[in-house]
Image (cartoon, rainbow, N blue to C red; front, side, top):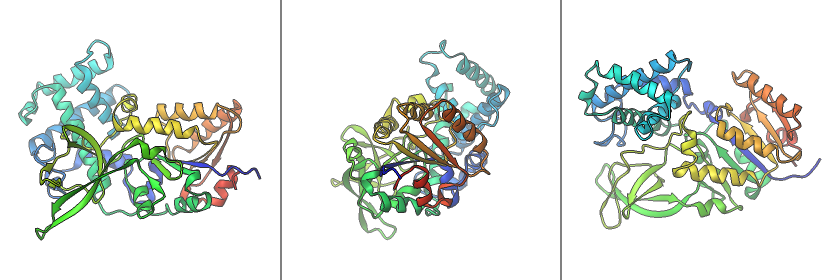
Length: 394
């Protein structure tokens, strides 16, 4: 057996379902069904500027998204999910910068404007189509953050990731995940041999329910940590529900409060720390990923995903639906480099994506694009020794 001891793990949301994370369909349904009283009492994220704390804005956002969904279905987009809705809202937000260059967005904007003009939607304190779209977009972000981050869920059926680290060593194993949840971070917490790219810390303070002053750490995005090959680097090109855009020293900085966000955080000078009312945690959307790969923290992550990919000849992939054209192109260019590249895709043959992935693997194999293998079981169902054998790794 050829000895190649480096493996890149590439995972999508499918690997999180075993831990009780909701799927895309249920998250989309939640956006339309959730009521205001379910939101404002759950966690302190719902501060005054949040679209969730104002019932008028809450219901206005839901109605706006129903209009978007109606247009999407009538224009042949099929089953629209929350990322589709997020993208379409983002397009409307940016539409006024170049209204004649995007006929699709013009059609959508005109459709919704006609709907809104016949309702009392503007009573929700939004007074332009772009502002309506921005409120609806932020509404999606807050709902997804709440559903993925705040319920108590622990990583299950993911211990194999720890086994890969032990077998290969942290210097020979990195992870690219497209998940917004934090299950992998929870799995790796307590270890010193990994980084998520947020390492420059600041001690901040808050009062607990007994009124006592407590401290915690906020870590800021630092690209230097993602350059350390000795650690397992966790790369999230689609963003993460535990990222916050925090105002510090006259700048907005992306950060992770390590013990969770609290509505009132104070710095060492007892000055309040606030998160941005315009960014409730990045969601890249389905039609706007090209924007997210060019701007903000997701652009940083995408850049490092492309860079780290060049360090590897072996990829282990599971739970990815192969619907992100940017990611797909990145992987295709990787496998086209030479015949030494080998990707093993762990996907249950009961998955709705299995037939499409099987066709993709056949196309790659038929075109002589490296070596591609599909194994009809999930990551959690496959022994690491079996997966490494598929990749000819020992």
